[in-house]
Image 1 (cartoon, rainbow, N blue to C red):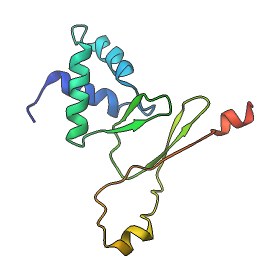
Image 2 (image 1 turned 30 degrees about the vertical axis):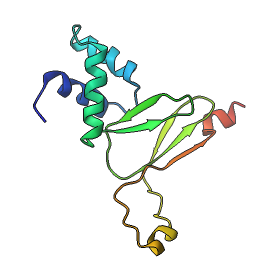
Image 3 (image 1 turned 90 degrees about the vertical axis):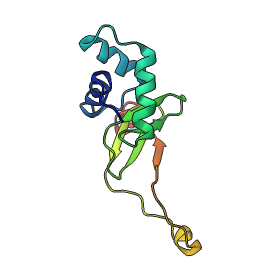
Image 4 (image 1 turned 90 degrees about the horizontal axis):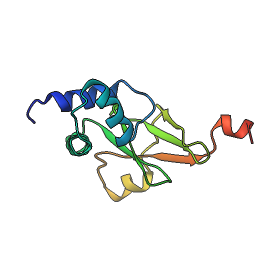
Length: 123
């Protein structure tokens, strides 16, 4: 992958945030540093960075993609009420059924959905 100032900016934004931003959030942040960057450039680079496994995507119940710069093995919890995304650093175990089938797991994406503690208290 060729080096690109715009791509470097986008990955810096994603890795510098813990809130799992959407493409629009990344675009808004990128424009603060580079007013000439286009939304198309942001989307193209997000796809490339995802394909290269430099970032990961999370699909939310509202069908919006969120991006995570932490590619270490971890799971996520997404609140159905407020949309907060929480990192869980105790990875889910690989199901025994897959092991029994003789499958080799190369990667996983485990997302739990429910109500976060803040929304439970405020309900």
